[in-house]
Length: 125
Image (cartoon, rainbow, N blue to C red):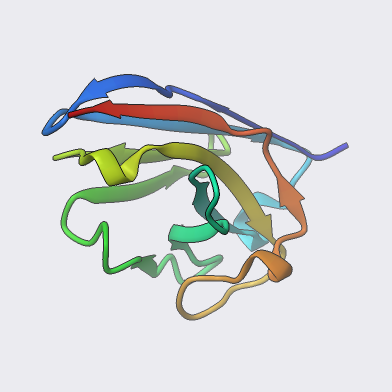
């Protein structure tokens, strides 16, 4: 059974930082693109960042470029999303996702095979 479990969400002040974790199990981790999506109330789920399987290329949405940083560890089969200089518009439920192939660029939700349950990030202004 594949599982993706996010943690690390919470309340941050504008300009602050949070680090999200996604612990996975049951995946062929080295062959899986790990992505982070977010969904704010009333908005569509959007891709934030991903690290492509095998080639380990990283991609970011324009809105988070230079502020968010994605990383993975093969041994721990875990991904992290370091979020710095948080803005109120970063507030959302953040989801970890898995796509069973390498890819170029941020994925669409329709490409995702496995989802975590999400972790809530709130940013106070």
